[in-house]
Image (cartoon, rainbow, N blue to C red; front, side, top):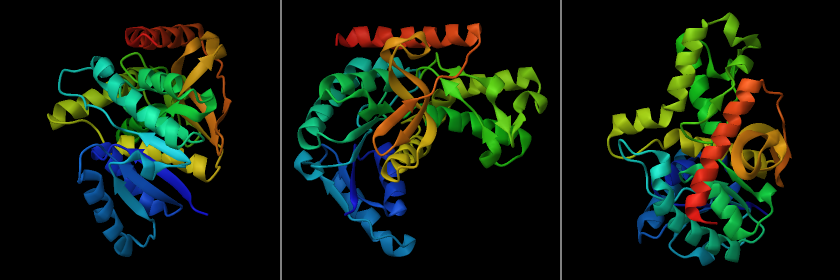
Length: 308
């Protein structure tokens, strides 16, 4: 029996994610949105790409959460996108109402599902979803580190003229201005990045990574990034549906790991069919640990605003 994946939100991020998942051809995909006709139209368009891209994925577009029932994985992309000059944090109260409503519906119709949060501010919205759904923490996570590390890898590959496949990077912390690139662990083909690039260049790439989303928002002027976020969410879905046990940086609810408790923060985790199967604790320097705690505090401030 094929798995079932629901993508909530048929905007650019949701549609991009649904397209990648359809091409995977390992699960049926439901695209749900409150706007009548939008998910139906995009699902039909994706269906018609099947004969061209050679996939038989069954795609359903709907405005009714009953059609999402018994989903194995749910990707939540719904919410307002950032505008130029707006931080992810500015979205907290607006998107809180949307994510709360969505999570209630998902918990009702797919109580055994695994939730992947994409809506911003991502870490706070993941915590809201955990609170509303009452799911165990291993079944609620945020797509943040997969996107942030992808941006870092991209910039390194561009600078060195190498394949992105050979670049490894680790970025911890919240998905915002307080994220923590662990540049000392970055490698290219197993070679430490510090041996291939001067420190000032590495620091510049780390800074550009932190501002990666804002850079795209400023360029687009209307809307925000969607190809890479959609791909980042699909990467996590892959590891769940195929039980790949990949080690990926994801926003995770910590209960004492890294000296942090009661908040979602991006850390490396092992992801399989049960969701987050292990939280991996990397030995950090005192400076890195302090930066991670500062990032966690920033997320905690957003959680306080939501009063959950």
